[in-house]
Image (spheres, rainbow, N blue to C red):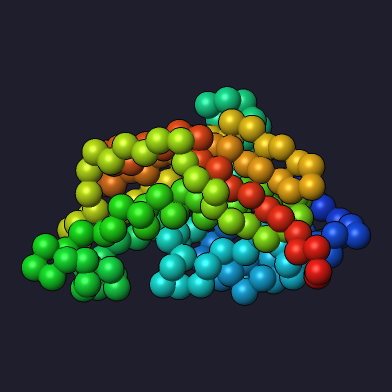
Amino acid sequence: MPAGTPASPREAGSNGRKSVTKKNAYSYDELITCAKGDLFGSGNAQLPMPPMLMMDRITAIHEDGGAFGKGYAEAEMDINPDLWFFKCHFEGDPVMPGCLGLDALWQLTGFYLGWTGAPGRGRALGVGSVKFTEQVQPDAKLLQFRIDIRRIMSRQITLGIANGTMLIDGKTAYETEDMRVTLFSDPEG
């Protein structure tokens, strides 16, 4: 299915979710809509606002396929020397903090869970392993993120487990295994 093509409609249920048409790609403006809490509905999966939003677009998102046949998502971030983290990390030796690349993979996993229709607010829970082999410096042009869903468990909470990869200008830089993201509903809300 071509990028940006609607996949299927999803209706709002008793969990407060908005009626959302699932797409297979999302623009920056749509990611901001998600960050404002307006894509999946109040109290549901939400991306952070800039400058903590660590992607400019989602280029692919699918319920099947991927390394484990259980779905995947891909996103990109344009890099330029004026990004906020290069000014403070480190003076005279600018490099993107590794935790921001890892956070981008957690953000993409949380978005994926919301996209599937799972209710609740998202939180990163951990990662089994992380391997950093490259660093993001100001002369880089493009970061690419990919998550491959290993498992999604939906009970009182939704737990997503995924492996992730980040590429810098096409070269593998970060590899993660067993990233865990949860969506939970506030019992008071």
